[in-house]
Length: 169
Image (cartoon, rainbow, N blue to C red; front, side):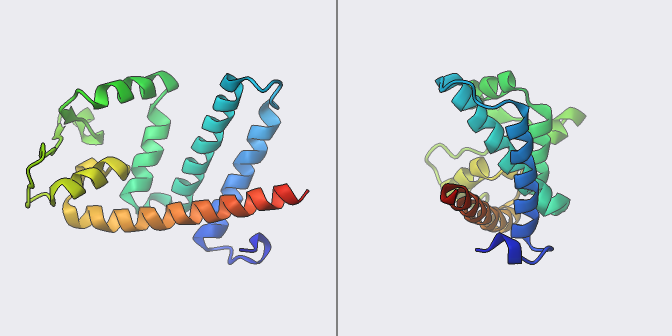
């Protein structure tokens, strides 16, 4: 993949432009002063957030997963992410954006039983993997999953190309 000869309206081009801009800002903020594991982890988190945000903005608001990703990035602090991870294993209901309006989406875990109406155990696994997936019906979930996989593949290709360009210098 050649970053210079990409179609400017392509997903790869939009992502690469946004991601490189975000990496430049991260580099300008504060260079790594030591190789402490904490600083490396903080830098890793900033790059991961930049990659996720760049991809979601590149897709724009056309996809549910991109809206869910941007909403999650805007509303969560680092501490609330840890609290969410701790709750995930014990909480049986999940709230979505609609919860702010009084609605609650019940987690459709089938506990080993196949629920044909919701697509079974595999659909539940997808709902956990795709941002915003817990609020989708099966048809939309499959469509969003396919698009999300395409975008993740694009993200990996662009990031590989950037890493290869930097390793040449």
